[in-house]
Structure formats: C-alpha cells, structure tokens
Length: 155
Image (cartoon, rainbow, N blue to C red; front, side, top):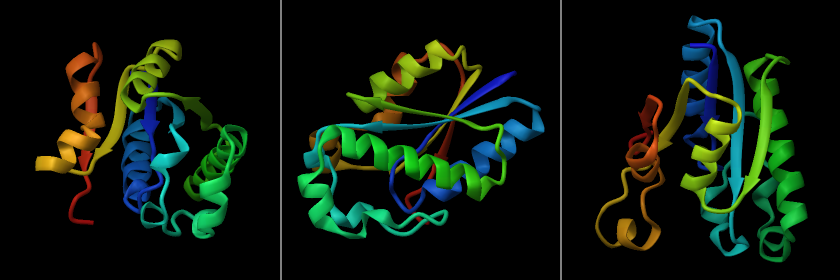
C-alpha cells in the first residue's frame, strides 16, 4: 500500500483518527493525504468543535453561523495544517472538498489513487442515524478499496 487517505471532521475524536491513521500509513511507508469535507454551513454547530491537535479556531459560533463557503474552506485548510503540524510530518498532503461527506471521501480516494481510507465512526443510532446518516456506512457500501474504520463513540 502506497497511499492512505485519512478523512477528518471537527469532532474531538479526529485526533485519534489522525494519529491511528498516521501510524498505519507510517508502518507501510505510505504517502498520506488528510481530507476534510465541508458541507452546508448549517451542519456546523458549536458542540462539534473542541480544541484538538492545537486547533481551536471554531470556538466563536458567530463565525460559523455567518461563514461563507470560502471562509469555511480557509478554516478547514488551517485545521488540516494544524493537524499536519501535530503529526509532525511536512510530507503529509491535505485536501478540502465541498459536498456530500461520503461522496467526497470516495471521490478523493479515487483522485489520489488511495490504497486505503481511514476514518472514524460516531456510531449513530436510531433517529439520529436516519436524519444524519452514517458517512462511514455510505463509504463502506460504495468503496472499492479497503477501509480502516476507527470506532470513536467512547472517546
């Protein structure tokens, strides 16, 4: 395996996903791409954001409520840069995509010719799963490459 795609959201569990994905990639001497997908600004709320990997720029909810797509993209790039610094590896590539989370993860994996996708799952159930859906489940259903899914519910 030569290329690993690590999909990160702003959940406080992203640090675990990044660190475990990084360890997996390094054990295979693989190239790493960190991905964050931005979606409708309505998705962003203050309870998903918490300081992680040295990044705490989303503590001001007013920014999130009034942010344009371009501002969200810039913030996501900054977040991925901080994640790269946390992992202490300047060879890590970063990508920010816009749209449906699962579709963009799969598309990016194809674009970079990834050999494996690393992502976390929040183990949503019931009504929350129906309303929000499961990104990990969608990626698993449609992926043609292996997935390394990290359960993050109890972190």
